[in-house]
Length: 222
Image 1: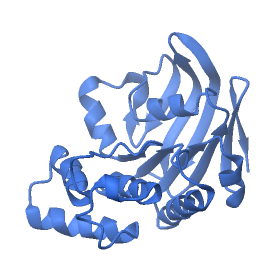
Image 2 (image 1 turned 30 degrees about the vertical axis):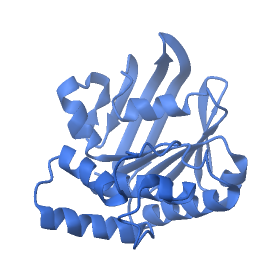
Image 3 (image 1 turned 120 degrees about the horizontal axis):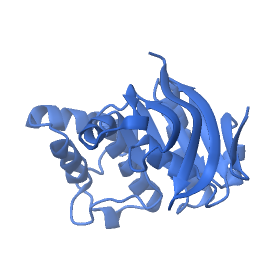
Image 4 (image 1 turned 120 degrees about the vertical axis):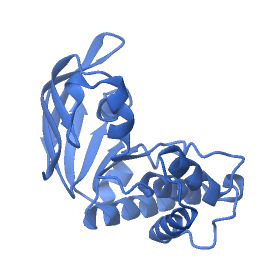
């Protein structure tokens, strides 16, 4: 199945109030898609629908083979194993090294073989360009390096879909461009990436398919 996300006539609610209506979107494997709009326009809430944190009350949604319209609580961990999520504020464990941050996530999602854990961490560390930083603590890293660790963490379970929620929001323009390039490279290697942002400087660096959130609607632009 090449379609990873499909929404039909979806209305997104926040605190029982509709904030985005009639979302009709299909996202296929390997696409890089911007979610563009002002803060509060519904971008992050749509991402929360995708990872099962906000229920679907109106319309239809499928994500990575899961029916999110009727998503059962016991299904949410299995859905999230198909996703990699990158947040604006990194959300790293401050008392653990880069290696142990990644290992913690892998242990929590069922990895047990130490040799396989080590091999996988080595692989994702190379992918994000952090070789030699494995024993560093988060506070010893720059903001851009911390976000690369967050991307590595999102990759450890080989997800089908990467959700990046304002991943450059706390970074300077040069570092933002580096993170954007990294996520673009991941989509070119076959990963599907949704990149939510309100930063036009970032957006204008690399044009791609865009879902524009404005006035309670989602409008597609290419």
